[in-house]
Amino acid sequence: MSGSLAVSLRRQQLIARVREGFRMAYGVDPTRFYAAPGRVNLIGDHTDYNAGLVLPCAIDRETIIAVGPADESDKTPRIHTVALDMGSVRDAFSIEGEIERAGNNWQNHIRGVAHFLRSRGVALRPARLAIGGDIPMGAGLSSSAALGVGTALALSDLAGQPLDPPDLASVAQKAESAFAGVACGIMDQMASACSMVGHAFLLDCRSLEHMPIPISDQLSIIVIDSGIRRQLEETGYNERREECEKAAEHYGLASLRPLTPALLEEGRGDLSDVIYRRARHVVSETARVEPTAVALVKGQTAELAQLMRASHHSLRDDFEVSIDPIDRLVSLIGTAIGDNGGVRMTGGGFGGSVVVLAKHEMIDIVTQVVETRYNPDAEIPASVQVYEAHAGAAQLTAG
Image 1 (tube, helix red, strand yellow):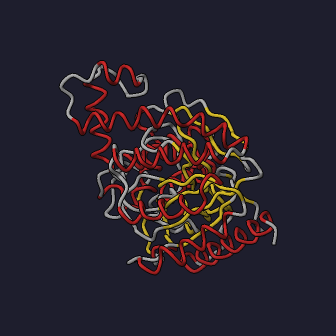
Image 2 (cartoon, one colour; image 1 turned 135 degrees about the vertical axis):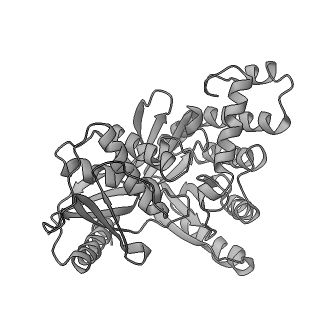
Image 3 (cartoon, helix red, strand yellow; image 1 turned 90 degrees about the vertical axis):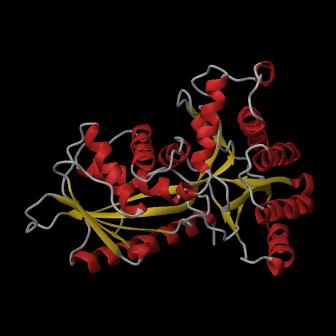
């Protein structure tokens, strides 16, 4: 089966599942469908909230949102939601007055998006939503960003005030930070909102300037899900952001973006070793992004191997967000593929996934390494998936 046919079939199956979930929850059919993809970050981790450069890629796994008008018998204008991947749990909140945070994270993404849409002047309409998808949650593939972006698209479009993709990303990012409690940057949401098929997404997180980067047809995007789940709001993610802010303050900067290797050393002074290493990661990681984009276009696997190796070592040693099982996966795969591709941890860290950019013939080798050399000794088995570079969020036509 061709890649495009497989993507189409997978999406139609998702739509059918979400449509049926909507029917079961509300007793009627939905009238609209929206989709927003997850993403894998190819390089540039923890640089986004430091106003640096990033190179993510939307993947062909997505969140689908089915939408229908509110129940006419509902006297209070509300947004009702059923989360099909959470055991079909439900939430409802009034769109009059203050929108308050709820007890569960998925609810706060929906409520936060509604709050920040309204603060932009979007006149929310009461609605019923059913949400489902196939992005692995907690794997570092931005299921939360897809939820936020998809919800922002659905609710703004339903209001007759659809936002441009960067504005959708901004609303979703604010919702995740203020309502869900993750002080994230804008990268994940921008990738989910703005990406193009067959391309990675080079983003300057200071200016929000972005451009599509064509991926060489010699390369495959291979993601190994470690199976080790983490919730960013419960790990050291927010702590790392605070440490970066301390570093920027030490150097008299609004962010670490203007910091060069020379300035990093010249102004170190009495900066603690930990805060210095956090800043060193951000400086070196931002510098690796553009060379990686060039190697990605040209299919230069030896260069990718070197750049991604340096990135992983920096995340492991300077930023300290990798863990032993992830390091072992990266080491085993890197040894097996050599200069035929690069491998590194991806995402916020503390678990999640490993990304490989390699020649197509490396897919079987990577799979064999995971299944025969890693999994037999792993407490939690890892899984291998090959992804296609996907398009950003959109309204769907579904029969």
